[in-house]
Length: 192
Image (cartoon, rainbow, N blue to C red; front, side, top):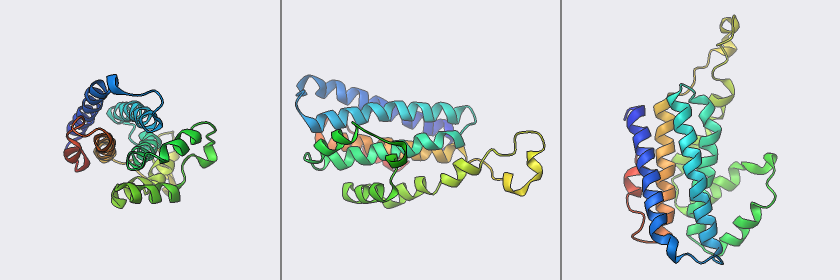
């Protein structure tokens, strides 16, 4: 798919999430920790995916990679929590005191992804892009292009958007697992 088609797929995922939450919203219980985690993670996913699409549309796919990494974390946490309501209390507690140095733990992400049914290949694709973020776009300043260390190209926007669409599909799948029949369409997105 082209970058434009993938951006549209992300938009469809956002609409599925918005529409589904409008359906389940009136029935939500303010004391339901699992619902709090899932709706909060869905909200976060909406913002992250929107920002990633905007950066990719502006030829800044490499700069979208930290957003993609967080979207991956958010989608995995959502599916992991949707699979076991008891996990919600710990997930909410983790939001109370985040630290940059502990924000993205690869081992925790891989473990939770496995437990949540998120394909290891999807997670590995995101984790494998760290060098694309740190090493791409290093040849734009005058004369920086003459150094071989600065020659790494940024990832294609379509690659970043395909992963964005897949993780939005995982968000939809997690919401559908918790509220069946209200969030259809995850399968198509997860195969973008």
